[in-house]
Image (cartoon, rainbow, N blue to C red; front, side):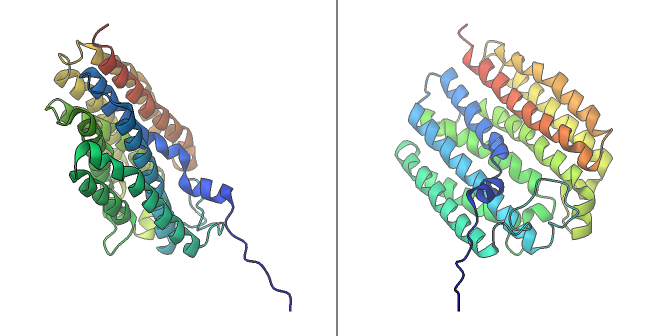
Length: 300
């Protein structure tokens, strides 16, 4: 009898499952916090880098978990409009994906653990909570993303937690003006989740996935998308004007691009939303760069 060697998942399959394009959402909060630390003359390269590596690995971990859980729950079908999924396409088996999730989680916690030397043992609690909610977003008995709570998690774990904690490991406190900045970061990144769920609304509804867009409908979702971007510019402009000597107003240059994406959102549906999704990703990075620049240029 001729034995057959098991064919393992290729590096390309793992790259697809990791979804590197989503790492922008993990990068922007660390960028904003680092710029805020620079503004207050407390920036330190190594803890900022460790926060970035931890954020990247946790984002990849969440993507792997989401890939596996959506496959197991039947959300990824042939009618899927978004990028191809690794488990649903058969390129990575569920068993391999579980191993990948375990390894990625371990790597993230290893990168995050040295932050204890900068922020104390409370950083362990932050790391563990991030890992737990990366799992609860798609998995567990009550997957939060399937019950309209994904947007809240984005505000917390792509806004408040990463911005405030990244600043804390450098500045050892959290100034009051940082909170509206962190919330604004979460709002901008939430536009990505909104447009993703807006594109998939019909498929999600059919599979029983009750995202916030499924719950509220298309028109309110478009209004929410618009408001998230506008508030993300206005809130820092009001709360950080003195801190940045007015340079925070640079972020207003993001608004025309956000408004253009929003107008296109109302005219497209299904796969036709792919360009809007791409613009939203670029706009999110643009907001991050402009806001970071405003924070860094207070002495100019």
